[in-house]
Picture (tube, helix red, strand yellow):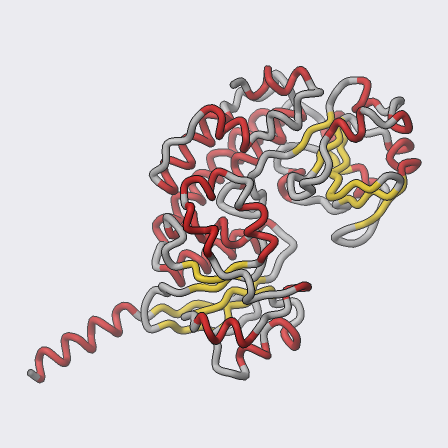
Length: 346
């Protein structure tokens, strides 16, 4: 009996998981989590891929669910329709009562405002892992933390290998293109007539594929900024990229607006809606490949369709159809660009 108890205790100890979150706080779990609430919008997609499905995911942001409902992931896992979204409200404010009802092993939450976003949960004994944001290295940290708390470090290591392979291919293709000759772009987060919300930063998923963000060149500050149509016309980028999270707008909204008729990107039909892939997650290599392909047609020979197919097979043991891949690549929204079908097939 004593030996049996000692062996059980040793086994339990061996399964204990310790890691540091992005606040610098040490988190300890007795074993891999099997009841997880995730409040940041992109992170549940990361968790699903690392853990192989939604079996341990019990609460997410309603904004995440809205995006999931339009993605392949909801077709692969219909049970996502029933997941709890009442655990978090506007501004990522936790609904502590709902979180307590779910009784998670751990909650993943943004760490930029601990007083409002994390402390209300920790005060009642809820364990929270804080996520920062802003750089490629921080995004890689998200993957590492999810791998640790779910007990899937090996899966995360495979995703990092994929990133390294893709970066090596990008560096090789860009080596002969001087920085001053590289494609210029503006990344539109949301579009509203004469008010355009953009990403003005040197995001890694822009710089790794060799795209120059003109908002950075212009010295625009902040993680998000608003510009006017006049500013966009003055910048006149080679490419305009529109965020897939803006479900209400697509390239035709720019093509059909006479205000923008003189834009180089309009004349050359180089306005693109991004694929339904998250650049800050394990899906990043496919985003980098897509960006490089639209930025430098003919320079890169990435088979993004095949990469998507392999990704879903590896991560979820799911066979996706040509129509589903079209959906990921936003083929319908990108119809106004005749080159898009050439670049991405289907």
